[in-house]
Length: 84
Image (cartoon, rainbow, N blue to C red; front, side, top):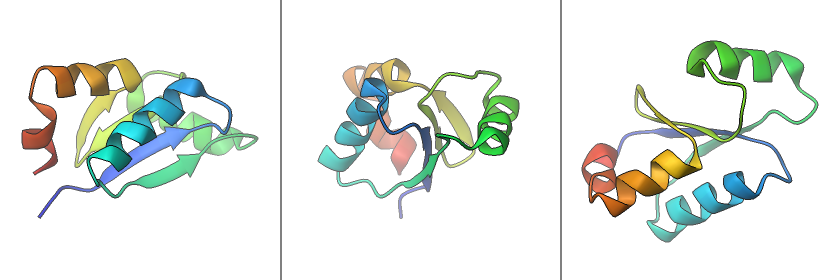
């Protein structure tokens, strides 16, 4: 059973699109929380992540970070084990 994945995004963010493309490629279901025009959701994300940029990605209770960190885990061969 794979862990739940949560990704905070905005609609026109190219890094959000890339992160979702990788998750979709790996057939990973994720909960997307769009923060466009939602200051309370963005504040919640910033409080949890310690960052204000999107995307912010969690796998289970592990904060992965953004798109670059997600792809770095994939390149290092560590993403699949984190997902399962």
